[in-house]
Length: 222
Image 1 (cartoon, rainbow, N blue to C red):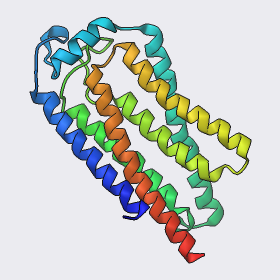
Image 2: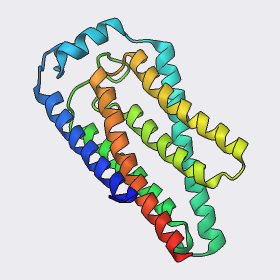
Image 3: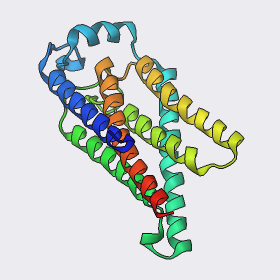
């Protein structure tokens, strides 16, 4: 098995696991333990954790900040792609792996939109807009997917070791801290966050497979 195929296979396994988890979240141990009697799957797991980890304003605020930092990487690489387009004067001359990155962004956005409409469960707390979709945790999904992709891009584009290492550490901290803060914030059921990490990992591994394929092709051309 080539390294490239390995990433695609892992991605497929993770997507299947996410689909199975989604089905179970909608059907297994569903109880009305949420606000306004809203129903939640995996109630025996989610209920006790939600009681032990109620809403925490500090953790919620930190997770919002970390989310904006993750989204800022989208802006960075988006601007980088636009600069390449104008400097090199042609869509075909833009680095192919940036198109792969764009594909990741679009895929994650599509999944986000789907689960805004296909509501599996609602948040364990009511914030400002009444009952809100909670599965999968969108902040977790977006941040983990975007930061992981940024980590990969920075690892090959930043040439100065000290700068590269610093940026990579910051990316890793952002991704891990987001998951922890989102759990502590108490604005999602525990399984919502696990699902967010799972689908983000699936998307990232798919992107990584495409990324590796592109770079292997470039090496052969050289």
